[in-house]
Image (cartoon, rainbow, N blue to C red; front, side):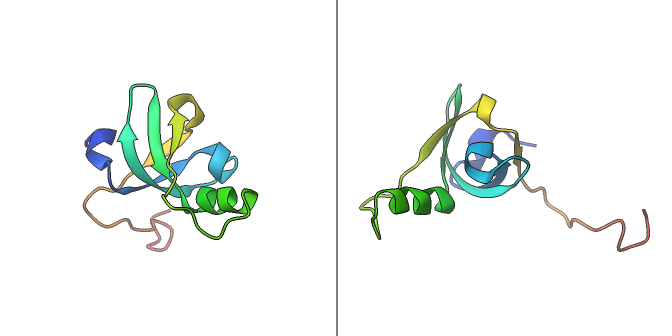
Length: 91
């Protein structure tokens, strides 16, 4: 497995309640990793910000700093298929 730094520039799936709500996953583009947290881009957060500012577009895409204590879970992918045990009668 690899660290978060190796995922910079990729889409991650994460639970960040301030963006996704409690117990919900969202897609984020990981821009930077710091000791205290991560910088992410999220379309829903961009839409919310533009709605609050009553704008149809922004000149630059905002990225948001999220301290690690506000991140519930970050998920990545590994090489190989993910199969449903239930669908194959294993569980």
